[in-house]
Length: 288
Image (cartoon, rainbow, N blue to C red; front, side, top):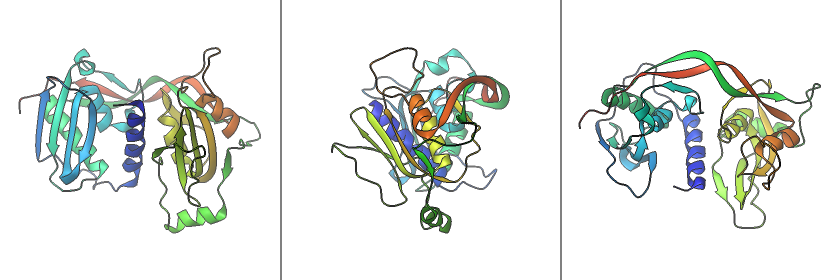
């Protein structure tokens, strides 16, 4: 699977996670049928995706990846700790079918959690412990934002507040071959990529901005900006350079530099107590 396919899938998956309704709290939910087998050989890897008719499958994937899929709030490195070494090494194929024809993303995650408990004897708990994070803050003491982050127009805010438009948590990535990407419809957000330049623009909720940034960095983002609501965003950066620069390189503007210069925000590296998922135990999967 190419880098662009992985990112596009992550963008779409995160959007669906927030866009679809959740089942009732404590409602038991499990796959109707599930097959878990060690990977024998595979020409490609599928970390897990839904198929028509309520099917879900994964190919050549580690238990750690399954856990990150089932608990996406702990997807960032360092937020899942513990467990035997093999969970990052041994690879498995899963074929499963839900009891309903069109599960939501939340229902798929709950069914995957139950499958991991049943077949891998996975036992996890949540606790607080120090972890490496990025703290997002407003750079200027007077609170002024950068030229690429301005409050959305009253008309666009009214469109979202009326329910006529639904905010996308992270708009799908579009690869453009034309010299200039197509502009989004009024009030809509867009993410375009041409060669190595990625541009995000349009009307975004600040939650969407955070979701987009979280997919691009290697640590959990802790938001301390105090910003809420909808903004008109215009952010351009080199999609190859999404780590803090350690000296000169031949890449374009990194996401860290772009956030500072264009949005007027800053991602500060810190080590702080944060919520992590602890793997208490896990076993090799039981037979089908």
